[in-house]
Amino acid sequence: MQIADNSVVSFHYTLSNTSGEELESNRNEHPTSYLHGAGNIIRGLEKAFEGHSAGDHFEVTLAPSDAYGVRNEELTQRIPVKHLVCEGKLKVGAIAQVNTEQGKRTVTVIKLGRHSATIDGNHPLAGQELVFSVDIADVREASSEEVAHGHAHGVGGHEH
Image 1 (cartoon, rainbow, N blue to C red):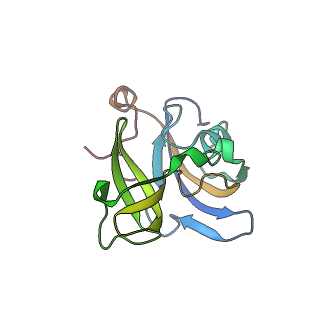
Image 2 (spheres, helix red, strand yellow):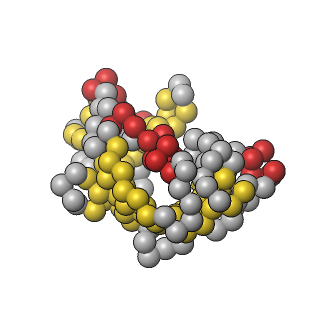
Image 3 (cartoon, rainbow, N blue to C red):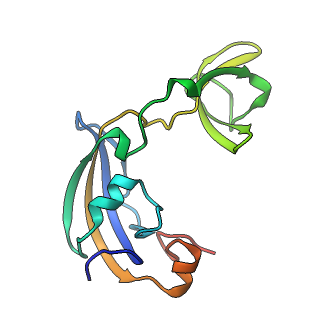
């Protein structure tokens, strides 16, 4: 079965930057599963899956616009420390949550003062060209429930 809209795809991947540094991998875990066409993974990677089948291997290099976006310097700002929620000690490089008018956002602390912090609301991989090495483990037709919910169910997908 070839990957098309409403297919559930299970895959292993390694994510690297263009220098070859490994950033993330699920090779020693259960495969990740997603519902193709539902926007559950980054746009450029989802497009690269189209037409592939179980057992296929491919590599794709994604421009920032097809991955986590280009950096937006307007997402770097100074805010009072009291608005940041962080597991553990708040320090430079920490990932924190901040409430906004659009809901909670994940930010990275880039400078920390006594009463305020400079935060970066860009995704940590924004602005980077990324290389995905993918092995497709399985492709199946989505159930009507998965299509209605907009995501894959079960191991590697969403579990209710």
